[in-house]
Amino acid sequence: RDPKAHRFLGQIYEAEDNIEKAFGCYKRSVELNPTQKDLVLKIAELLCNNDITDGRAKYWVDRAAKLFPGSPAIYRLKEQLLDCKGEDGWNQLFDLIQAELYARPDDVYINIRLVALYRSNNRLKDAVLHCQEAEKKIPLQSSLEWCSCVVETFEV
Image (cartoon, rainbow, N blue to C red):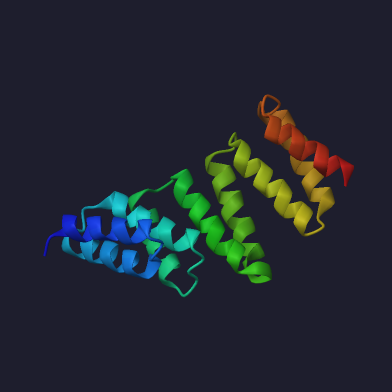
């Protein structure tokens, strides 16, 4: 009956790498006190980071997305879910990256992720075009990661 107790027990189970029991305790804590937004996000992260792909992760990521719209953490969780789908998730992942790029065009990570996605699918022309367009529009040159991504793309 005490959400704090369930949350604490979940932390103990998580520290012991008992993901299923941690998930159960966290879930019960949220059921008892639905205002724990941070715990909803924690559940989503717990499931995604442990490759739980039975539908629970998607449910909790979607629930967290409603509580934290536009959050980079939610974007990364959605990306993780789609990465697990392999070939089937490519179009969905592409759409997710495009939407996130529209919302945050100067985010280095998202630009790198799009170029890497193009490269992984042998769409080298698209990868090069994105590098060129991004270089024109936003100051990415100060990022070592971006510069490495561009060099890798042009080397291929």
